[in-house]
Image (tube, rainbow, N blue to C red; front, side):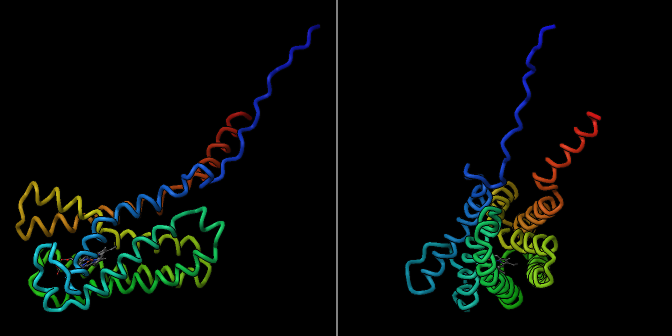
Length: 238
Ligand code: HEM
């Protein structure tokens, strides 16, 4: 009888989510890129408010009352850029205290973004987009405030899943400004700059982000999906 050695498949090395390959920075990196255009536009507007050159189209509402825009732009830049790093699994795992500390700053910044947006919606008259965009902005600002408050109260009672879901929703609504660069560009390019076209194209940026947020919240994580696949194949091999 001859004995043949049967090659035993070696188990694959354990894959750590957000490993050394830099994949854990892909999501924060993409989120930072998404917000670059509105943050740069906001910085140019701030430059103008403090007496610098006028590089953007005239906005009479800001000329009359610049304070809310200053608060809005500074808070939005902080929320968009710092907030992007809350989505790095590696950073959360390795520096939990950093996630907690920046999270507290972000709660304040996020509330300032939404409340200054709400203030401008209510008190700036004649913004483009008509009643449709006015109504959508009221809904978005209120939903953002609600999401931040619910995300914060969820983590106080250690409900991580609810905390994650509400914070994903709040962030997605805030960075709607980035998606609107595309939706407004395409919408107005195709359908002109009527109130309806502007209202619809800007609003659709928030609708897209809200849909992506709900998908991210409901999608099984890679680890859970892998575990599910392993169980299925084990069951199949019995
Ligand atoms: C990261 C997030 C955000 C960024 C970077 C951002 C950026 C900006 C900038 C740069 C402006 C000034 C536009 C100009 O110079 O004419 C602006 C205006 C405004 N934003 Fe935001 N924004 C953000 C989120 C939000 C959210 C969540 C709302 C809530 C609805 C909002 C509501 C408004 C309103 C009402 C105005 C005034 C529009 C006008 O009267 O022309 N923004 N935003």
